[in-house]
Length: 132
Image (cartoon, rainbow, N blue to C red; front, side):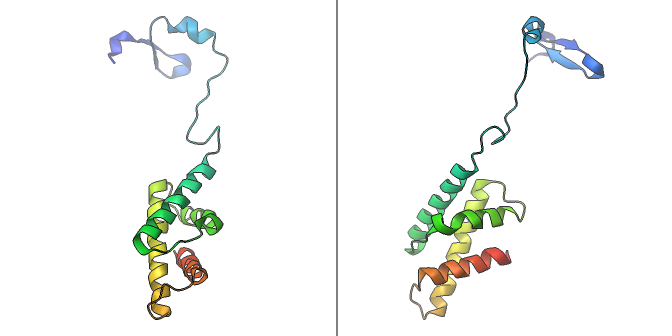
């Protein structure tokens, strides 16, 4: 956009650019609403559900183990996010998937190479998330 196609105004000492002809339209505006990812609608539940389904699919695809992420995943996601640096859902999905694979491998070693019990894997997964 070219600066010449805008009118520069200075309301309250802060310069702003307005497209010519917009002043009349702006006078009729009663409110302006800005939505910043979840401000107006809390979408955390749907994002968390997507993370849990993705982790379930990835872990089962990699290791053949079906984890009950719907039962425990929400609290684990919150715990991972609370560490900072995991605001992005891809990062959280990646971290939880890796923690799951490590928990499965530890469980296999503890049980002599077998897949182990899912409860043991989930307990180990919680330990990893808590330590993180």
